[in-house]
Image 1 (cartoon, rainbow, N blue to C red):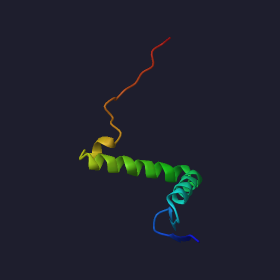
Image 2: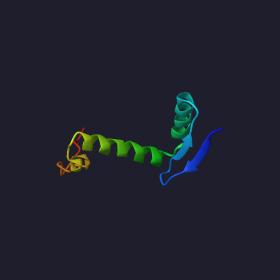
Image 3: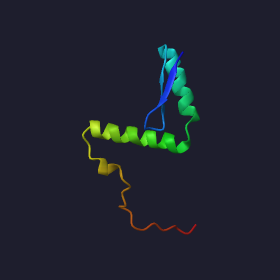
Length: 74
């Protein structure tokens, strides 16, 4: 039987009997997660990737190089 326990993250930790069980559980967990949780997880992966590549994480912030946008008359 599998054991489930909570850690400090929003994700549940579970001991699985096989890799297939673990894969299926993670897919189900990911699909049941809210949009905010999925977005936070994706952003964390982006930041981790940038730190591994030794790039400055400040470059990920919104750049405001355009100061004014006007619409042309049609």
